[in-house]
Picture 1 (cartoon, rainbow, N blue to C red):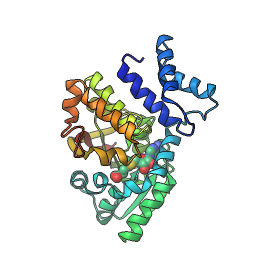
Picture 2: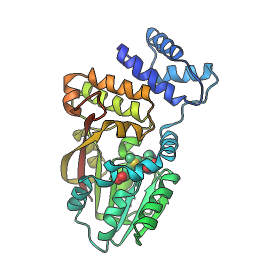
Picture 3: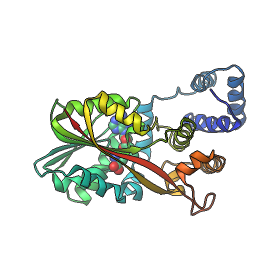
Picture 4: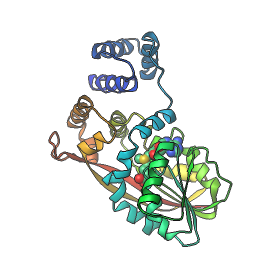
Amino acid sequence: MLRSQSSIRVFASIARRRYSTAVIRDEFFESAVALTISRNCCMIAMADAAAKESNMTRRPDSKTLSQQRYTQYADGYVTSETHARGSDLDRLLAIAEPQSHWCMLDVATGGGHTALKFAPHVGHVIASDLTPRMLEKAEEFIVKERGAGNVSFRQADAENLPFEDAQFDLVTCRIAPHHFPNAQAFVRECARVLKQGGLLLLQDQLLPDDQEAARFVDDFERLRDPSHHRAFNTAEWRAMFAGAGIALEHSEEYIKRHDFLDWARRQGNDEETIAELIRMLREAAPIARDWMDPRHWGRESATFVNRHILMRGRAN
Ligand SMILES: C[S@@+](CC[C@H](N)C(=O)[O-])C[C@H]1O[C@@H](n2cnc3c(N)ncnc32)[C@H](O)[C@@H]1O
C-alpha cells in the first residue's frame, strides 16, 4: 500500500522506466498513482491497468527484465570496479579454501569476476548466467583477455539449473540472488547439484532487521535497477540455507562503499532518476541513513554503502 508522497514519486519514477518504450508524461503517472491510492489498489495492479489503457507493452516478468537490463548494460559489469576489484573476492577465496581437483559452478556470473578469481585454484569452472549477452562478455573477458583455460560457459536460470544431481564440489553466487524471484528455489537447486559435503558460497546485499529500513533499502535499489527483486536479512538467509538442507558453517558481513554516480549510471539511470535517488536518501529515516552511511551526499563525490552477507554452507 502506498502511504506517502515520497512513495508516489518513487513509484511514478519506476513505472515510467518500466514502460519506457512509450512516451509518457509525468502528470499521467502522478495522477494515475493518486487515483490508485484513493481506490486502495496495489501498486502493480495500477501500473498494469495504466499500461492496458494506454496500449503499452505489459510489464515484463522479473527474469525477462533482468535479461533485458543485463543485455543492455553488460559492458559496465565487466569493467565495474565494484565487481572486479573488491577485497570481497579475496575473502570469498579465503573462506572457501578451494582445492585443485574441484569442479565449480558460478551461478549468475555476470562479468565473470568470481569465476576468474577461482579458476586458478580449482580443476574446472562452469560460469553460468541467465543472460546470453552477459555470458558472451564474460567469455571475452575471462578467456580471450585473461587467458583462463579451465572455464566453460552455460546459460542457466539459477532457480532451475540444467545440471545433474551431485555434480559440483563448490557452487558460488556473488551479488546476484537479489534478482531471483524465488531465492529459496535457487538455494535448493544449489543443494541438489552439490556433491554430499560440497560447499555453497554465497555473497549478496544484506537488509537491516528493521522492516521500515529494509523496505527503504530495497526501494532505493529497485529505483536504480527495476530488475532488483528483493534482498534478505541474516535470519532469512539462515532459514533458506536450513530449508535446503545446507548446514551453515560461516557467515560474515562485508561493507562495500560505492561511488554513487558510477553505481547509478552503470544501470543507465537518467538525471531525473539520479535526482530522485539523492532526494530519497536525503529524506530517509535515520535508521536507513545509518545503514547506508551516505557521504558528500548531493555532490559529485557522493558515496554510500551496501552491506553484504558472505556465507559458506555445506550440503548434507
Ligand atoms: C550483478 S551481476 C552478478 C555479478 C557477478 N556474480 C560478479 O561476481 O561480479 C547479476 C547477474 O545476475 C544475472 N541473473 C539475474 N537473474 C538471474 C537468474 N534467474 N538466473 C541466473 N542469473 C541471473 C544477470 O544476468 C546478471 O548477469
